[in-house]
Amino acid sequence: MPGTAAREEYERDLLVQLTRRWGHRVAVKKDELDLDGHFDPALPDFPEHLVPVLGLPGADRLDRDARERILSAAWIAYNAKTAAIEDEIILPACRLMLRERIPVRRDEVAVDALHQTIIDEHYHILMCHNAVGVTRRRRALAGVRFAPDVWAVVRGRAAVRAGLSGFDRDIVDIAFSLAAETTISGFLSALATAQEIQPMNRITTDLHRRDESGHAVVFRELCGSLYRSLDSAGQQVFREALVSGLTAFRSADLEPWVIVAAQGGFEIGVDQLDEWAASRPPPRRDTAPLQLLLDDLGIGPDLVRPGT
Image (cartoon, rainbow, N blue to C red; front, top):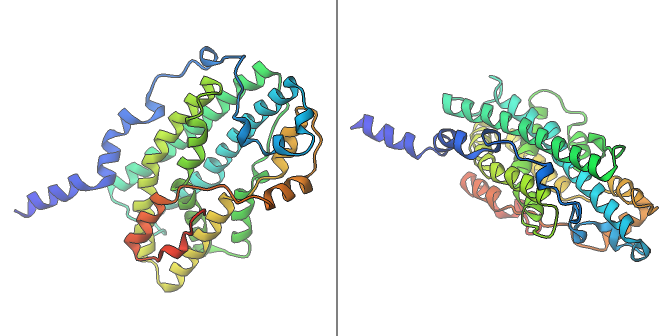
């Protein structure tokens, strides 16, 4: 029966499965976390091995208080970057894909998935804001702030968009969002699994990470539908922007670490950090979810190189 076949296909639709479970699986639908209740002042706010400034010459002479202030500032920076990715990269792309001019899948389920993602991302920004608010208050770091354009990924997208307009610019925005949503879980996992740090920080990051696994599916489905609808020139723009996005996401953020180090009285320069970053491989990002889409689209594995 055609009706039965259509029903079975509907039930197999990944977006159908995600949107149905949304109310049970996402952070925004759960009870608010008692942030102060999960704050342990005796524990560090961030893993030391993830703070490059503590590996620079002279860092070994910092006392315990200075190191702890640097770790607290690193947590603030981490959340500022996360919020910037959500606000500057992902949310604009979600809103773009709701517009008629963007040829993505636009049935009721796809529109539901996009609106649910928008709600999730706004809530993630609020989670970052609330968690950092506790840290600023409890650690006396009220003045530590980071502008969105201080992050390499935000600047990277601006560079790729420069000189573009209209549909090509839209393609760049969506390709960067695909790079973000299919690799951000790895970015979050380092903290979500760090048992030695502040429980508040680990738990909030893990809640965010769990949501992002669903978002990766949403973006694979919708960006796949977009790519298939493009002509060869448009597909080339998309592929090049996707590579640029992946490169930007693994680029070192230098200026923010100077600000972080200063909170512990450790004066360093961007040149020192640049030299440090150049001597080490770029951080790895989990590109397996993205590779699933590329395989489905027939795009060669060379687009996403190991370590990208």
